[in-house]
Length: 451
Image (cartoon, rainbow, N blue to C red; front, side):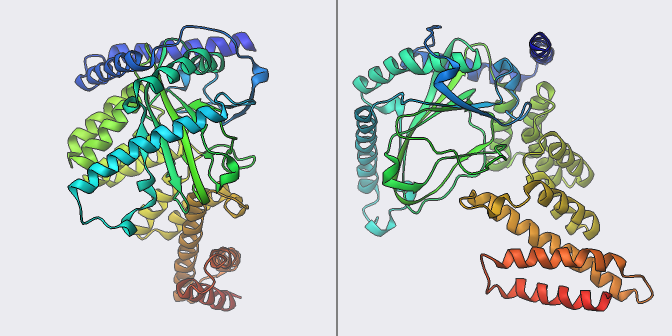
C-alpha cells in the first residue's frame, strides 16, 4: 500500500510538471515563475533557507486530516502529506520570546500610526477600530530581532516543516505579527499565498476568549483549532482556513508564509492574478486569461473554477457560469459556496425546484454543525441564509400548487414540514425577525391547505 501511494504521488507530480512544461509558453505562466523566483530570492536574503537538519519525529505532534485531495492545487507536491494539519505538543517559542515579538510589533505599529496621525490630524480616538491594533510585517522589524527569528527558523521551524511534509529548500518569503482586540471579526475562508503556513500564538490563552484557526474539513469537531502560546500549527497553505474572532481580551499571533525553491505554485498565482484583474482593474478578459492559464496546470482547483464562473457571469455567459460553478461544487465538496451560488442563480432564473435541490445539498453537507457551541460564525451565517433560501423555494413551489386547483398537493405535504423546521431554526438567533415569522406563518397555512 505504501509503495502504491508513493507511485500515485510520483505520477501526480510527473503529470503536473508535464502539464506545466507544455504551457510554459504562456506569458502569464512565465510571469508566475518570475514572481516565484523573485519572492524566493528575497526570502532567502532575509530569512535564510532550510538545510535538512533533523530533530523532529511523529511523537512531537498531534495531527488531523482534511482529507486527501482537499489541500489545494499544490497538495501533490507535499509527498502525500499535504492533507495533514499538525500542531506541536511542546512550545517552539518561550514565553519571553513571545513577549519580545509582541513588544517589537507594538513598536512598529505605533511608529506607523504616528505617521498616519501626522498625515491626518483630524483622526479621532474613537475612530480606532479592531484592525487598528494592527499588524507588523516581519521584514520591517529590527535586524537583531530578524537574526533571532532566523536562528529559530534554522533550528526549529524549517526542520519541523521538512519532517512533516518532506519538502526541502524552504524559505519564509513573508510573515506578519497580527494583533486583535475584542470584539474582533472572523476572517473569510481562504488559502494563503504560500506553500506552507506556520501559525504561532504569542498571547497567553488566559488573556482572551475565542480565537484559533477554523480548518475547513475538520468535520469531526468543526470548532476552531486553538493552541497554547508558543506552540506551532503548520499546514499546507492551500488548506481552506480562517482566523476565528476573539470575544474578549487581546490576542497576538505570529504567522509565517513559506515557499519552496522548485515549486512555483502556478495555480494559486494565476488565481490571485485573475482576482486582481477582475476586482481591481475591472479587466474581465485579462481575468479570464489568468484563470484559464491556472486551469491548464491545475484543472481540479475549485477556486479557479469559481473565478471563471464570475467572469462568465459578467460576460452574460450564463450556461458557462453554471458549468464552472458545478465543477467547483463537485471538485471540492467541503465548501458549499458553489452550491449556494448555483441555488441563487437558479432562483434568479425562476427555477425554485432546481434551486431547492442545490440548497438541500448544501444543508445536508452542513448538517447541524453550525448549531454547535463555538461554531465558526461565517458557517453559522451561511447555514442561516441557506435555510431561509431553501424555505423560500419551498414556499414558491407550494404556492404554485395552490394555484393549480386540481393538482395533487403531495409535494407540499412532504416538503412544507421541513421548510417550517428550517424557518424555526432560523428564528433561533433572531426570534423577532418579522420576515421569517411571516414566512413560517404562511408555510403553516399552506400545509393546512395541502392537507
